[in-house]
View (tube, rainbow, N blue to C red):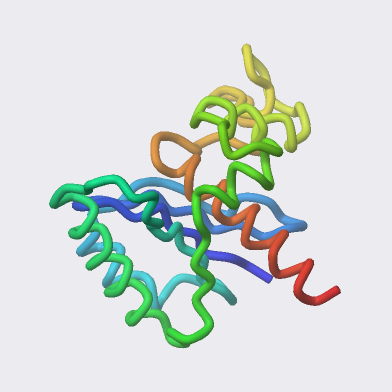
Length: 160
């Protein structure tokens, strides 16, 4: 099963196309309007998206704009009722074992999950000449990959 995972933002979103056996099939950051047009054409069986949660704090305009994009992305998917919404808290718990984890901890946990096959300081990422399995994952695509890994774990637990 190939999962399209999205880390939505106000103007652009991180995305990752992930297959459990074949690994990362694509990843990057796209402007939201382009992501919206392409979402239904991605070669994916499932859509997972990071969802915003309220923790009692006041939020600004950016949070509400992101919520609008989440709704638009869900509606653009061919099966809106089957979209898996993944909360950041669940990502941190799954990958790091604690909700206190920071983005750097989540990124390191992802790196540790992948084999060391490339060259350079982080063989999992590698270099242009010798790319590793995480080569090309940058910026918000790390969060999208974290969503994909957490969604896959949740789906496997639901099937068990």
